Length: 237
Image (cartoon, rainbow, N blue to C red):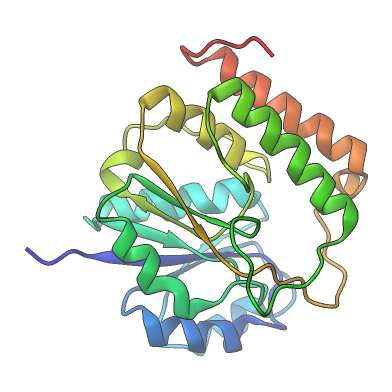
């Protein structure tokens, strides 16, 4: 039986990178879904001109987690065996999609890690981004008995049969933390794949208050604590 995979990109105001990224993604994936999360910068108009991707549009911006959940539901409903998620900001390399698809044959979640291996194209992340990632990844590993090196990389592959077991509800950027808690509680198999650490020379925003580092860390802690409180896992720090 043919193993069917869907590549999905959650996008919000990515007109600058959209076409160049999608051109590459479509070269490595025959089934591509874009979830336009209420973009207002012309992203929707660019998507309307393409006939090589499917588009689901949120009328208003609902958040990164909400866009991912829309993609998950679509992949499950349409009977795909796996879904690969990749960001549309130019910081992931679409040519690595086939490796994620292949690894998803053997693992429930295949998660990209920018800190697992060294690559020639690596460049330094903003110090506060690295600090927050290290802090939250360390805490996540301690509380969930995992051994992740990068809790937040958006380049992932999921087996849809495993996703269907998870109850996810977080709309914002903290959704990956909710997902890790649910995955650990469900006993899903996890593998990390090294991907280059690419940060483009441009300002990226989390939106509003979350651009403040401490506010963002507090939000991540709230998501983690809330997710643990509804799981069967030990919540002790």
